[in-house]
Amino acid sequence: MIPPLRHRLSLTTVLVCGGFVVTLAMGIRHGFGFWQLPITQERGWSRETFAFALALQNLLWGATQPFAGMLADRHGAFRVLALAVLCYAGGLVLMALAPNVPLFDLGAGVLIGVACSGTTYSLVYGVIGRTAPPARRSQALGICAAAGSFGQFAMVPISQWLIGHVGWQQALFGLAALALLMLPLGLGLREPAAAPAAPGMQQSPLAAAREAFATPAFRWLMVGYFVCGFQVVFIGVHLPAYLRDKAMDPQLAVWALALIGLFNIAGTWSAGQLGARIKAKWLLSGIYFTRAAVIALWLALPLTAASTLVFAAAMGFLWLATVPLTSGVIATVFGVRYLGMLSGFVFFSHQVGSFLGVWLGGWLYDRRGSYDVVWAITVVLGVVAGLANLPIREQPMARLAVA
Image (tube, rainbow, N blue to C red; front, side, top):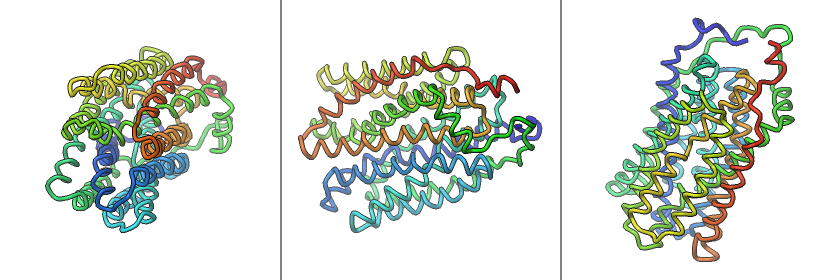
């Protein structure tokens, strides 16, 4: 049983502190694509080498997310977040100093990947899900997702400015200092101990996981999230290099990624608002179908600065709009007791897609000299994800209905 509202955290406190945590965590990593060319050129590494480190980061982020969520569900989010912040800052420092590929993989891949599992959406969403009243949950999740989107918008020009004015290594040191700001913000996410569960309502984490994986809605969500990860991380990491290959102005990539973050604010907030009125599966399917259409149209038209900025704005509106909707479906169907853990499992599929998107982009580029095949894959997968979300049934489990 969740403690009565008066004994829980203030929803405003959770949204403010959680929003700033997600702003920093998501904003810092959103600009990693700008480091690809400086690092590979100075170290003499291939694009695949850089891409593999970020692919490893995404994979480990997903693999450790269920465990971070489970620990946060049982012992509170702040303890998990504190350890994750130290890993985040340490990973950025090691990313700057690594003289060889294994150490670069350890910093950019392992440490930051583990850190993301304890500083981003799934962890913060667990606290929000247990704090917000059910009628306001979708809207609260959308507000937090919009905060992460603002971080992506704000941090892109900051990252680019730091690289241009102090060099890529010093820029990473600066980001490490910013990451440490998440520690005091995490104090606003400390939850009181939960009340004992009512008879018949007790459920172990293993039982909750088994119940979820046996439910078709949960598996369909995982399919859609896999595609989401493939698309957004491929674009986020490889878009700057793709535009440079096409002889576009380097500043265009800065504006494009910034626009993605800016329009993502509106997209995630709108998704949270609409999720309180329209079934999430229709919204999710519409997002994935529209993504496929936007990518295909941009590739079909002549590449110009204007078409790229319109593409970035459209993709930004759809970028993380899937996040509050997906978490909202999980909370509706399975309850909020293990929301962090179950969101983590679904997010793992997102990160498997992220791993393949970023690594495959670098691997195919090094072998074919272009990103054309990967762009085509993103379009096809968008259609697949749109279809996958249609069969989802947004009905609470029988045990919740009885309760």
